[in-house]
Image (cartoon, rainbow, N blue to C red; front, top):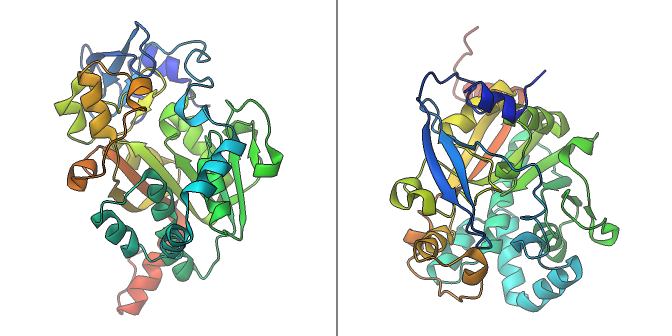
Length: 346
């Protein structure tokens, strides 16, 4: 049975790569809480083997951090739906639908005109899956959003006419919102499978050990499905440039910040293989600059920034990873080798 994250911490074992770190091998960083401006600091450790960070002093109760002023819980689903309908004109919907159907180049064109916004990151991740559907000869008809907040991703897909089943779960919702497909549940309460499982900036929030989380993700993912993970990544310049003031920490709600190496290791241990990954356009660099100036997340949310210098935004430390199961990968590998007349080694 997997240990709890606190047991790994007590034993000085990295909860991501599971290697024991002797002596003072962990790099430690005191990180201030910058979401709401509480006068608090938290300790994070960096694994010398995989480069992932983990929170050491995990709060017993997170209700002081996840409440109706937390960014993904601050609007009701009704207000999110209203906001999306007001934002998306016929032309904007047309562009987003084109990306959703697999024309990902439209997204870059959209960005080059300075029109990028965070919703495009949601859609671009799913656009990448169109190729998998063709290779597997399968239509992905069920999508689960883990840690959905008040449903922006779920409702955006509904607005764009996604024809399949799209559900969102989040233990910090105030109630079930059945009419919107949003449920107050944790990942561990599910007992069915989905074609696509999406974690939009939620994987780093789990207080359960990564091994337990990844095991459950593998359990609910269809054998031919895709696991889409959008996270802040420790393998970036952000930690060197901004140190404890990087927006990627978001202490204490980010309990694990995966490096690429750490992510690949834990995925492989849990029967997953990386199929695709890429950097995302994001505001994290600007948030980190605000933190350096003593501006909290709550205060920064009122600043309207112009979308320029996208090469800076894309170097923000936020990445998207798409995993498939090992058997599915072996199927693709076999098809590829047969196409070129090569044989698989036993």
